[in-house]
Image (cartoon, rainbow, N blue to C red; front, top):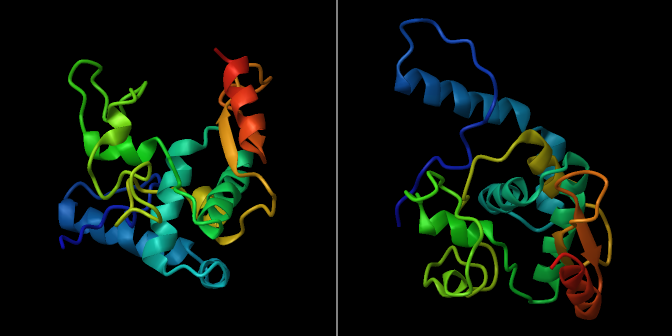
Length: 188
């Protein structure tokens, strides 16, 4: 298996000396990750039953799913609930990641996804494969890492973008599949 630094290059604003090269920047980003992921967060990952690599993998999905920062712990909680019930995560970003760059839109994150896309045979595709993907799909922010360390305790199993929300990018959360379908239908 190929090991990458994806997920561990901490996204932040960095002041670099003019002579900085790629090695310098990567080292700085890794040291920043080590400094910003606190002992309490590491304990939170352990309490959730995750290794650091698994925690970063889940936080990367939360990063790509959440638009509203306050929803990150709820989204993390939804994914934990799904994992606990043996359900697939069914997270769109885990399909977008292996699809890669989309020249027609100039984006790395294809949107919208089509039903055929959800059938993509990739170990990252959480519509096809249960559990976490083999690695991070992005470099998560501190708030996504914190959400995975300290998720909201809810009974929610589903969420979908809420077209009627007062805050753009908000999601509608639900416990039952029937509630979820109603939330989906509301926005069609």
